[in-house]
Length: 243
Image (cartoon, rainbow, N blue to C red):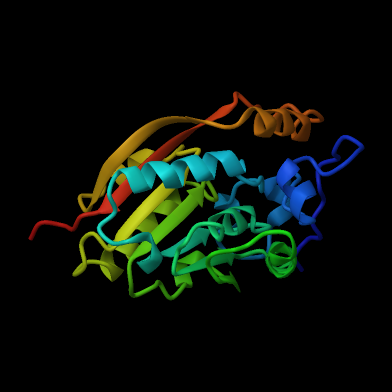
């Protein structure tokens, strides 16, 4: 049986992130990987849950737009792989994507993400419809149209290798239809070693001062993770494999 989730204790007071306080959602907390096991074969490759800083994702989407996507943003599906409680999905929905989809393996996190997506429009004005899918990203039916995928280091290299291969196969006859935003890009080499992907950007993206303060508060009770106020990020485009 899957274990119940156990949140790492948080400092007393209001929700850690101003984003949560502003919108009445629950996207905070640090959940160790061991508490996220579902009985799936890939449990040993998952990483801890921690929501991306909204300012990081907003800045990365802006940088992607500066890099001139092949299609207008309103033709793209934003696909959050390893959506957790849905913070990235909610932030992305404030941009004019065609739709925003989050896929999450853990059923409890997926339930929280759906709840967050329901209440979010009460305080925000989403520009894109949101869908949360509970399931395995390696079994997900990938979009047929232009896709901007998002990873916040949800799993280790063995799973990422399989995902990259699957994406390349699915979009093999449509170069330019798939872009990837990768935050905390610990396994960037996996993407870069695949002949079909081109790196458009790699570097540090700073978070806002408010997000950094919230970040430090969120991890104050443990020592495994730290916050430097920025994230190593990368942007890739599937440009096709030469035959």
